[in-house]
Image (cartoon, rainbow, N blue to C red):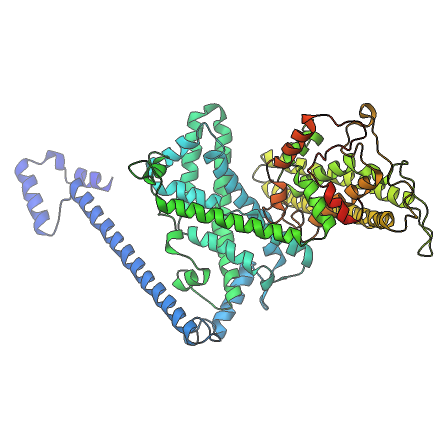
Length: 623
């Protein structure tokens, strides 16, 4: 506008060509210059090249510093085991001023109190609450759109790759920040310390691990935001009817990302410095050394593949055979698996015989079959089979249906015992134990109601004003779920423990004095039309007692701190006894072949439907 006004003042439009040329000559003589669009673009390219050069120089500088730190670490570690890996005597990172700086910033950021190696209770609660929900939100966004959407997942990845290969990579890494096992520890620590400050050493591992994941992505938050935006726009385009929902999910994921990198990451940085007890600049290569970060872990190493099967094709020789190297790796993996299974079997053989037999009984009870048997109407559809509480419930239903009649039946004639100087009525004792099952069912129903409430809340879409309260409510219910899971398993373990203790007394009596159990040789007969099919039909009462004892012993063991159904992590891990539970129905199939081949003759004891274990009962003291 100023230029146009100047043209009007000098009346440039009314000047003749000669006067215009004279004015232009004077303008150039006094230093004036005319720039066209081409020159402007050339200058911009030059500036960009200069920027790239500066970036390369900075990266080279950081690489040299990192190598210097690593070489210093190796030299100092080789000089003596008692010396620190890096010489810190002259860098001043542990000076009084720098420690004061850490304390001040930690206090200002709400990480911990001004003095002491402590984290504030509020900081750990934020990690267990809003941060947990934020990273799980990113995880859900990534999985829903790139893994759980078979119609559009490949198209979404292709659309991201068409823009830049790094978009899908950073989106995947942001989705992998969440690991439920890492956050369980925060909940356990909060229950332990209540509202008191938390010692740094108690959550050092979890804080350091979370900071490491964010550290790798600290310079890529804009790329993640762009990737989320591209996914949201793509889905809004292909599913216009659901455009509002996709936009809402996109905004929520971007809000979660903002929380993580604008609030949480700076807090974790100062929390990390409290662990190290010295000041280190964020861009200092020493942080990479302390976090054991490898260059290939940073985003930017993903290669595009037009054909997902191309990697398989490249691993083959021209004649179509797989490379010998991959064969060797496969054989090595199989050998390691066999060795691990052999070690597990040796550990099981070292257990008491009753526990071994109980585990063998459960070995023929695949979770899928138990679910079909005891959840016919699919009431508990929100619970996966990997949920430890649900597995405990299914196994308890099996115990209740097949073995618990031993605790209440009048067919078993038991005399009162006075051997300890106190009268013991085992009919009453066993019946009292059976009554505990009512509390177990009530607690499990309470646990499932919490699951339903959590699932309902996660499907609701709160307003921005109610988001914090919504998040707090979900966190509160998650904590109640953990407590409910503990209650269910503790009740079952207590019942199994009391069952095993008292039935062991009866087994010893059958083997020895025979003063309590009058009729161990009586044959059990059940009417299928009234009592249903029972696995112990046509077995003796003595065998029934031992089966019940063995199942209770194995079940109790799995619920102790050495078993797979124990612990604060609610998802089953495939460890020593996870292998017993997650398996094919091989044992059950063999048993079904035996039972289906020919019906048992009269007075013939039927084959065990859960495997041949009758011979092992002899070692419990009854044959």
